[in-house]
Length: 406
Image (cartoon, rainbow, N blue to C red; front, side):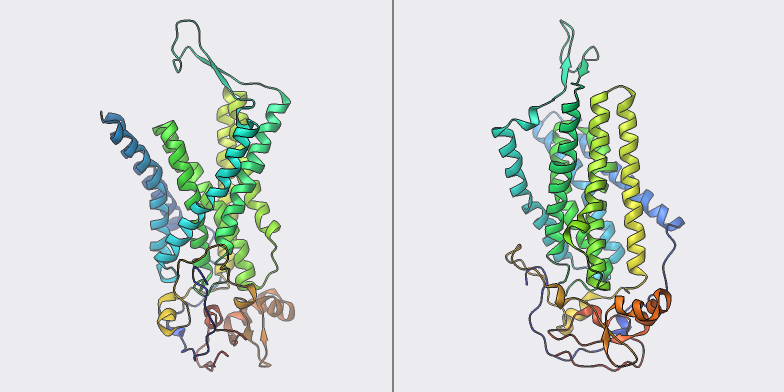
């Protein structure tokens, strides 16, 4: 399988309990260390966005100016991906992070085709454009010029369609394709790895978009997007990864439309607040920006809640010993869209006292929510019918019998 799927494995799997962190219940929603990390990451993103663009503006060589703006668009992504890897490196493979990042960029090709088709066949993006009106003798962009926007209902409907369909729905579908392909792959050994690979897919798309906007808007746009737009794209990718994580690790039935609902709404409302605030002008621009910030924060609150919920049940494990043992297949670059890991190959089951294998949902149904979650964490792994999947070895209690996966 491309990107980390595996073949048919039949070798005995050594116990790896020494490499597994025990789950000790759900962590606090956000403590002092969490807030400090967020502040540090945002501070680094802003500093690395401002620095290159300032140097580029002072440079007389136009090539250096372009290089400075490109770096301002790239470095926020580098900060976020570096933070993710340093925080969860035991579960991650840098090669797979790069593969998912680049795959999301490749999925931009059909999206650009749709945009170009709309632009040249219907002129859609030129409808309801705002114009800059300048007095006689004034240059464009001067303080005397005034931005005038059509206030017709059709223009607000145009903004809504652009925000929720063209910008939000299509972009989130592309992120879903990049993330869903590896959701059930063997190298996704725990919830943390799926989260970060999801973030990499979202950041691949966000990076290209960010560079294009920064090249046209300069340093102010670089700062604003480093604080809002890039983290927003990352949050919607994480929302997709969290929803798929419930299917991957907890056997919760999740369909594609349900996976996309929350990311599309978060992304769409963020865009529409900015679009309408810009069209109304005056103080409404600031109000739209504040509402966009609030939408981004709410998206991250939802991400944090889902991550904690999954981490409380699925312990973290080290992927590298599993590769050495032959349990996990290393990531490879193959045909991306046609190499999806199948869901039935990645659903985790654990052994109950009766010696039979059950999913997480079946544990909850029989024991109840609290007792079922506790019994799940204490249960031993169950053999899968096709190949061993690493998550089936997580949380192995001491003294559990090591079996052979057929």
